[in-house]
Amino acid sequence: MRLLFVKDSLAWPRSSGHDVHTYHMMRALAALGHRLGLLTASPPPPEAVAGLPLDWTGTFPPPGEPPRGPASQLGHLQEKFRDYWGVDPNRVAAVGAAADEWDADAVVVVGLNVLPYLGAVRGRARVWYAADEWFWHHASQVKLLDRRTWGEAKQALVKGLYERAYRSLLDRVWVVTEPDRRAMRWVAGVTGIDVVPNGVDGDYYTPLAAEQDERTCTFWGRLDFGPNVQALEWFCGAVWPRVRAAHPDARLRVFGFNPTAPVLALVGHDGVELAADLPDLRAEVARQQVVVLPFVSGGGIKNKLLEAAAMGKPVVCSPTALNGLRRPEEAGFVLPRTPAEWAEGLAGLWADAAKRASAGAAARAWVVAHHSWETAARTAEAGLKEAVRR
Image (tube, rainbow, N blue to C red; front, side, top):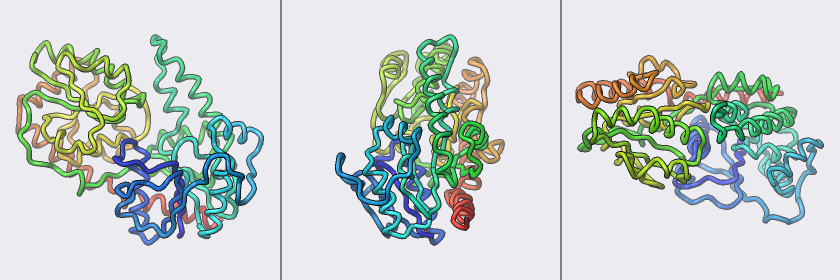
């Protein structure tokens, strides 16, 4: 099949989940014999597309240029959301024109604001690589006693209405977990939904020999992403004081892009350290004894958990971090449910090098066996073939 991927940008370094799963899904589909096209707002950095056998590439026209290509068929509410997202009408036409020019079998749009791009696509399978279902993503962050989170309720309603408005343009939707599939079916009313769990590049994320710093733990991810911020706030408020009371020299090292004010308020004291915007964190993660993933909100699969497992790190995580994982009981994760159990889990791993090594080896074996990108691509391929046949 000829698969045209449409994404506003492919960034380097890959700082977002969308950049990670788009690149690896494209590469895995190419390995299965499919041909790839890519349409972006501007040419991506060479590093961002290295290893992708692209047969066709293109960029959107400059803002404000008259649309050139098939006419948009967006309905009234769909047009309202196109305007809400600030999508230039010439981009809608450009996607349709690119699909026609390259004779794509399917157009795969990636991201949140991208559904208007399907408005001029005709005679081709139309796929949204959503990954997460966005109503649930926002609703899960609402805490009734925390006024700061109440705005997430409005965002949940907006995103839910947006998804439902565009359901007629969606032949397939790719999500990463079964709960996301159920939410997409209930909220958006879409029936052609494929659960495509994220994989991990086990050759890139591999155990590294490094001298580890005593009583260290680490967390990483985009630090302007709500579930990541809430995870750190909960951990630093509920767990870390207990840990430091027992181990005054304990350190939590946070790595990530775009740290926001709530994150900056947590670091720089009480053993919490921040290293922002590292292009490659593998060597730094190797120096830490334990990975912590204290999620209290959000859906989808946590790429950082797959990366930690592939690097052979012992992982202490909340049950929420296990969303969408295959056979997680084989991974050797420590799964505390209370702050006291979190502190005990960390202390137990810090005190026992053999236990850390065993947990890390189990995590590595599990992720290599159950979360390859080839498996994800074959699931996506099956849905694509069904959509193309229609």
